[in-house]
Length: 115
Length: 114
Image (cartoon, rainbow over all chains, first blue to last red; front, side):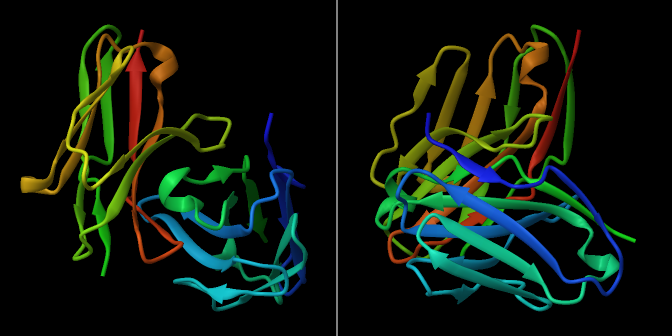
C-alpha cells in the first residue's frame, strides 16, 4: 500500500525552538506539499516542491522553511516556533503530472502545539 | 484566481438520513479538476472522487453520489442512508491544468447521530 508517512503524530514544543517536521513517501512522487489545517480556514499551502532541491512558496510561507535533499523526503522547518504556529500540519505528494489526474496522497498529519 | 467555497461548516443528521454537502468553485481556467476528500478522526485525508471540467456526468458509488453542474459552478456530494462511519470532515478541492496546486474549501464537518 502506498504511503505518505509523517514522523510524529503529536508534538509539543516551546516558543523559540527550532522544529523539524518530517515527511517521507514511498511512491516515487515528484511533487510534495506541506499544508497547515486550522478550524474555519481549511487547508492552506505553506510550501511545495516539484523536484529534489527545488521549492516554491505557497500561500503562507512566513515563519517556515523547507528542505528536500532526497526525492522521498520533504521536511518542514519552523525556524523559531511561535504560539500562532500551533496547528495540524499535513504533508501530501503527487506525480509530476499528477495533481489533476490522480490527486494527492496525504499523510496522517502532525498536530503541533507550541507553548 | 481560484477559490472553493463550502458554506456549510457543520452538519448533523440522524443515521439513515440523506445529506448533501455543497461545494461552489471559482476559476477562469477552462480545464480544471474537482475533488472530494474525506478526513476521518484519524486525520488522514482520503481521496473520494475526481472530476474534470469536461465531464459533467453525475457519478454514483454505492451510497455516495456527486452532482457536477458547470452552469452553477457547483460540485455537490450526497450521502444516501448515512451511517455513523460517515462522520468526518469533508473537503472539496479544485486544481487547474496549468498548476500543481490544490485549492481547498474550508471543509464541512458531518456528524451522523446513531
